[in-house]
Amino acid sequence: MTFATRNIGAARVGIAVLVLTMLGLAMAALVSVAIPAENKDSFSQLVGGLNNATGMVIGYFFGMTRRGSGA
Image (tube, rainbow, N blue to C red; front, side, top):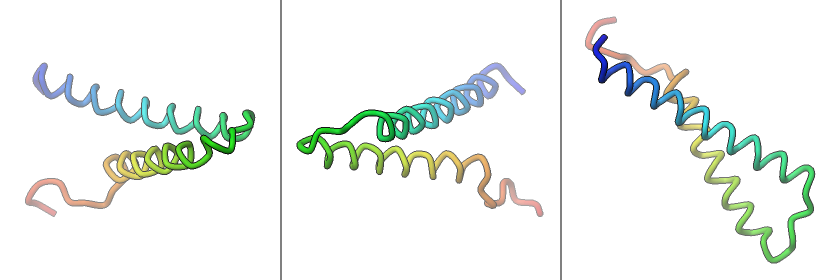
């Protein structure tokens, strides 16, 4: 493992943790803070985008795709 591949792996994990943290904060805000009616649609779109990003993170780390030409 070279220095560059180790840094790329760490960056991917960092981005995954950031996305999951943002989704958790959005869900906590949804539960604990009253969202004003004029901001409800934009907040729903924000949560939907974070949900999509979370799906991509889960697909990357737990997906069943083949890596490499073997298997």
